[in-house]
Length: 193
Image 1: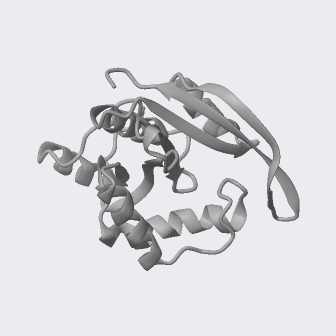
Image 2: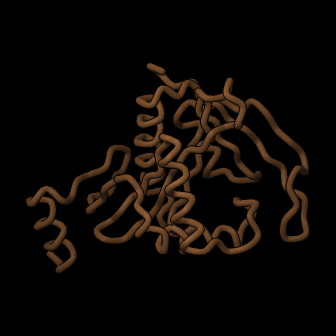
């Protein structure tokens, strides 16, 4: 047994490690509410996507202070902002925002999820989405909506794995890195909401 495996076994026995549902990997994974102190790790994940992909339509890096404010605003609006940790490292996060500002939309939320590069395909996204969707249903959200910059086969697969259905496709609605980008929207009616 290597040192890392021994430490994971010690943490598991103390109740600090567990196998996350939908994950084939044994690890010290935990999902919890984000805190302002998590902003540095969250922006290190998010800024990668801003600066190197068209997954996010933001074009400038986000500061730790701005992210801490976003976390507080989302949670202050009674919506979840969750982080996935592996040991002491944040390896992903997911959150929901109001779909639209008009009051009649109050039972719809748009979901977002980002994983640390290299952590896809390990069940981490599924674990985060399971927790996020459960929290949305508990909060009385009736419709979860996922907007996806296309192409993004991994995100499409994750949404469809959870039963989201594609309901819209906007052609060339975004422009980043010198090219036009399509966006699709997927929806999921939440059980119990």
